[in-house]
Image (tube, rainbow, N blue to C red; front, top):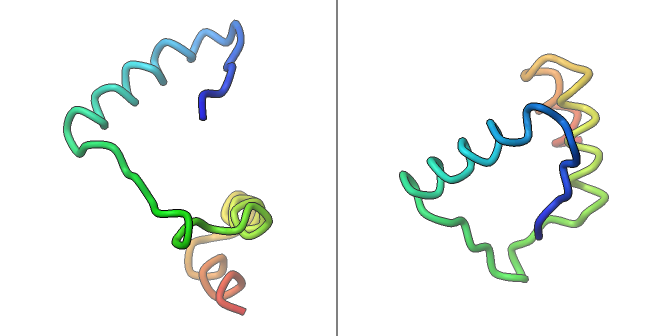
Length: 62
């Protein structure tokens, strides 16, 4: 899935970083049965953005 990052000046930096990461580690291809539920992903992102790692891990596990 490609996201349109728009005119943000950091877009080119992100593209270069992505290319380098793929070159170094390869693409991560997760089978459909191993994909995370989109709601889980959203909740993880919100918790991670608002809490310290130890706290966010405990909250996510609950």
